[in-house]
Image 1 (cartoon, rainbow, N blue to C red):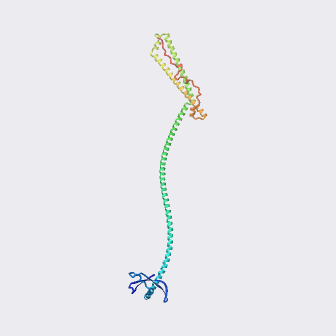
Image 2 (image 1 turned 90 degrees about the horizontal axis):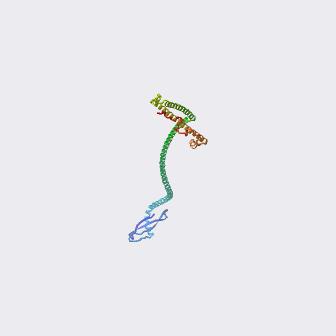
Image 3 (image 1 turned 135 degrees about the vertical axis):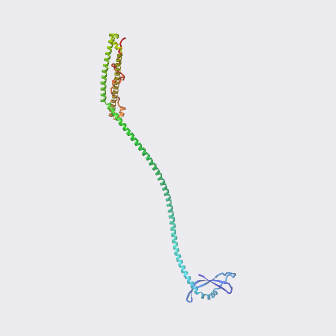
Length: 346
């Protein structure tokens, strides 16, 4: 601390300023007091520098020192307190500086940690952005797959309905085929029953007997016609138609009606005979076909072929041809030929 003293000297008449500073502690009357060193200052004005000798300054200050001792002691005490406060403040400043340095280091560490955390945050944000993009892609992919799944379900439903319809159609066709097959099997069974060899043989025997009976009847009719013709010729040639009553009868309407009846009976017998012959020929032809079919089926069974292949690729027919198959259908035995109408001369 510096003590500033203001003095006015009678020589110059201008005030002067003197600064005192403690230099060292000296013993004065048993008490320790600081010694004061004067410091000259420039005087403000026209005079320039006014310096005083040190002895004169001490002489001038002697009256004032006595009155300033209590104040100096107070000032010294205050100076000591200030120094102690300064020392404490310096210590506190050192501690504060140490704390500040520690805090600065911690701040640097925190700044580094902040940078590291910021870098991690940036990485996490980038990862989050990538994950969001990936999630959006997954959601779009899931939506597309869901749409495809719905389309596939609709197509499967349509195909399933079509398959059910096709199954129903196939089932209906199978039922119709089974019905037709049963009908054909029944027809085939009836046809087989009606064309069995034993039945055909019986029918052939019946037709043969009918044919023999018709031939006998035809012979009887022919004999009767010959007798009638002979009688008419004998009557017309021996006695003459003009004198004999039988000649009149032959020219009468009754004789013409009788001849017409004989001719109609003869034509009916011929038609019946022709129909019997045609029926006999048809039965023989069917019998021959059935025998050929049986031979082909037997041959196919022996060679391991199906009935259709056996019927197509079977051996040729080895049955002898019947005589009635080569003759014309409308052929009639000579004995059944129509006889001429009996006529008389004149």
